[in-house]
Image (cartoon, rainbow over all chains, first blue to last red):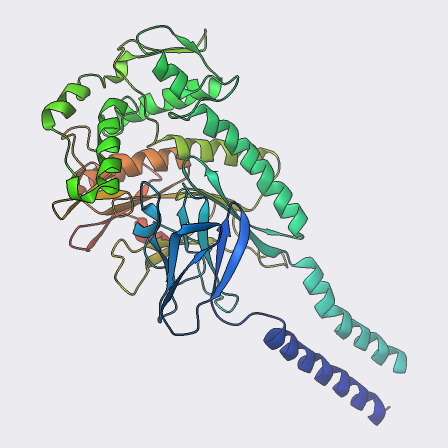
Length: 127
Length: 350
């Protein structure tokens, strides 16, 4: 007895191909590529910064003009100026990897690195 | 035959959908308003709503401890550590049992660590705190406290003057100049109590970090098919200009890991950095190492031991940690070399 008709096999093959094609589309188009820094002020996401541009620049956010962030060519970001009394935010240094965070508590601002492509990243980084 | 084929097809089509529906997604929440530090919660959940609800209830629970253990602020209707300090030498303060329990815990750790972690050390810490803030605000005129000033304050740091009456639920500082500073134990202790509370309520997999006091509930439930993996915690490199931002990662399940370091909270006098962890013996910032990480079950112990071992010469600290079952530690020395307790390296990720 024949296991399957030729047309059946074709239909199955087509469905599988369609599935694979959709999977690739989904991964490449609907998900973000590369590392991104999210800046939160008073628990609100106020800015998302692409860290893959390969150039150095500084900026501030309208919510707190006295706090300055710098993005570096190597894909890192840091607090570089702040009007807070302890400067722990600046002392935290540059952030590169998913799981890293830098916060300026007096100003209620934090930077968090998000990179959906980095599957091997630790759950948290402490120090 | 066609029916069988159709059946197989259906299975193939349903499989990915079924998997996606069952495997929980990773969520993370941050809060900046507790314990003057960053609180982070990481977990896997079926929906964002479910995770947000859980992290909010953890926040609410932590906030109670935050208010009770606060030394700087008053809260309506709450007698906290500040209330005890304000009444030093005057009268006993009636406090919540969670303050009594913290202070009893702190007294035990004081004895265990030979005084290397002391919650009655507030008078000295306050002087350093004030000089540090002034020095950061005005770096040109940054100065060190006078040793005579520190020694005078150290006269008022005898932990036996913290009088706890468990039956009356009161705390009284019999030395009017004494100030409690629970910074070295409160975060870890609160994290542990809150983690236990949610374990009792049936939470089986979650990561709570209060200012680097990481407490893992269970292991990581990211398999979807019931598989679990340990949580992976990266230990930051104290050497910030090094391109390796982490030294390595440790893998933990049902354990705590706490790091104390000298490289974030400090000020500079004449080109030299002076950080915030003050050795009760020398009254100066301890310089035996730049960071210590402690792994053990109880987050409160891990917090107390990380401060205590930071204040000990590394060989003594190592002997101390090795003498306690279930506690491991790692030290980064000023020359950037690393020392481990007997079994710490078992937790290192390969």
